[in-house]
Image (cartoon, rainbow, N blue to C red):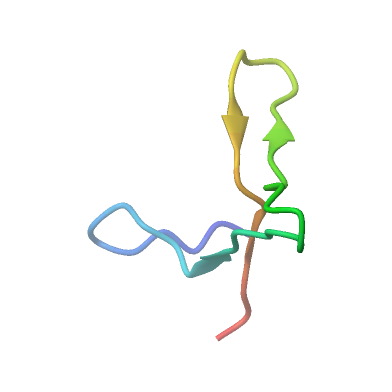
Amino acid sequence: MNDIDEHGFRANVGIILINNCDQVLLGGRIGTKGWQFPQGGIHP
C-alpha cells in the first residue's frame, strides 16, 4: 500500500535514538550506499 499525497509524501515517522553514552543509532541501507535514521510508515 503506497499512500503518496499530492506533494509526493506519505505519512511516516522518524526517530533519533541517543543513549546515555551519547551514542546515536543509525541504520545501514541495503542495496544502496548510505545511512539513515530509523523510520517507518504510520496508519493515520
